[in-house]
Amino acid sequence: MGLLSRLAVVLLACAALPAQAVEYLELTDFHLVDGTGAPPREVRRLVARDGIIVAIDEDGRVPEPEPDARWLRIGLHGAWVMPGLIDTHVHVARFPDARPHAEAILRSAVRGGVTAVRDLAGDARALAELERATGTGEFIGPQVVYSALFGGADIYKDGPTTEMAEGRAPGSAPWTRAVNAGTDLRQAVAEAKGTGATNIKLYGDMDAKLVRRIIAEARRQGLLTTAHATVFPAGPGDLVEAGVGSLAHAPYLVWEGAASIPGDYRKRTEGPWSSVAPDDPRLLALYRRMAARGVFLDATLYVYKAMRNYSPDVQADWTDAAFAWAAKATRLAHQAGVRVTTGTDWFEPRDEFDLPHTHEELALLVEAAGFTPMEAIVAATRNGAAALGLDSRGTVQVDKVADLLVLDASPLDDIRNTTRIRMTVVRGKPVSP
Image (cartoon, rainbow, N blue to C red; front, side, top):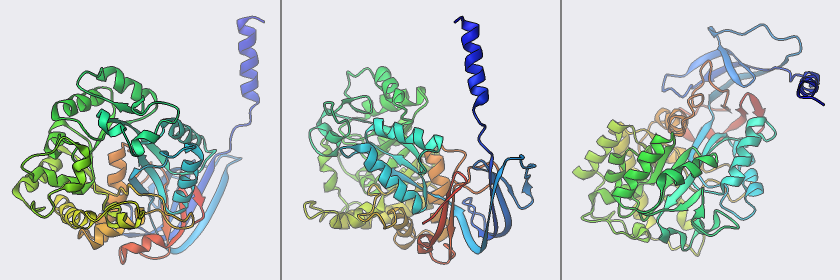
């Protein structure tokens, strides 16, 4: 069969495939907290077409429905609607048999109101499969943004970093890479990008010179960057000056005020939280530089609050001081204009019927770091979307993706009302709690 004949067969086969019907979702009669920081307002009608918001009352326009369109109308009778939550620090694919574990965690998470996550180190093979399945609609779960992990050789000797590339030597996979001064970073970043990762995470055992080179190369190739707030010996100021996009773990900001920073990443649990105040002039200057350069703070307060309960094998006496210090530092950074996001690090609950810990992180921003409920909601929605590079998400506005959290009570009256979930809407599809 000639080329033209084969092409004709392909075109006829494609023409024979039934077109997927356009899906509309209409929500009526609710209070809207849109994620921008604007005051709540009453909404009579919101319409989404194929997962994109096309109208909110008089804003936007509802098109003439296609003849075979499917239209779902849900009256909310005074419920509260806000953007779906975004968790900027999860690890859902760092287990053996990563794909089914990650899918179970994400399925539970979307029922619990989380509509986007940033995985900050896991098996990219499983994460790429999940991102594809979510995009095609065969799996209804949060939007997944995932990362490649770069660190010094020592971080691959033990711990979770040894389990992120089953079947390969630790530190040798494109998505979890041991790097040093002699690494061809142009090649390493290109290989990381080739896995589908859109973010490079800098983990530990890297100096300021290496940090600058990695961040510069990642930016040149169009990737975002995240780093632990100290990567030993490179400190917070080094990372900010190098142009990092997000700093994770507020307790590690303390090293900006230390006389010296050890070169061993394992020393991170020995921070000078009792001798360096969160409002030390060196820290206040750091917050101002972070705000000026647009560096996000992925505070992860919850993991330090709860680490003692994680396992009896974890020696976590140091976390009480780390949490108290970090809560104050997060408040001060926020007051200085730093955009804070809601990352948990310990995302998944112990019981599949419990809610993701993102709700606890959100509550701690209010109860421990002094945010107003509205400020915490912005952190968990608009700021999270911006940190992940998801421009089409994070707020409830015309032309944005219809990722929504529908609540039975106002989250502005009590931030813990984000747990009173009537349903989640992910890309225009309702999901029961």
